[in-house]
Image (cartoon, rainbow, N blue to C red; front, side):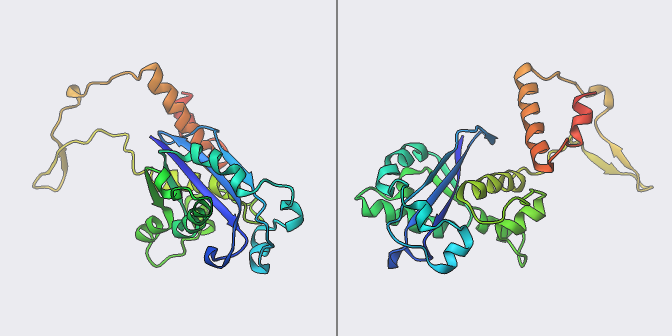
Length: 234
């Protein structure tokens, strides 16, 4: 399955009052693996950013003046996200701006190009009710390092969100075979399946390769060697 983790930066908070997209950052996942096939563009919005927005992203009008206009990158973006499931934190904000940009060009809405949208803010609120669920808070909760995030940046935030999303949805992978258990009169748990009945199947070369890729993702999340490396190298 192809998924795109996406973030934008904008000149302000409301596309209905003329605010525009100034940066798009996308990170591609294929079957939950980072592919490195990312999409990143700065965009000349043909207007200044509001003071509050500028304080968030730091992208000045001078920096953006020689960058392409949205019309010049729209086709690239359409082809890149076509048919993918898109993952966004606080999706209504980014989709509101992207749909507005597509509408200005007479194109079908951004969402019509996607197979679906996952809002990680909605998911996080369901998983962690009553807690802070900003991207920074989720990075702290899931052990994703964001120490290098001084200002908001679309590609950087998409990369952080990709790590957070994979951590949020990894689930609990048990290394033990599930067995039926029953309590004896003394309260001890008895295994219903005898040990001799367990069949051990060796991993194939493809499965070992995929396992190493997962370990690589865990290494990245902990900024070092994850504990499972000691088992993989044994």
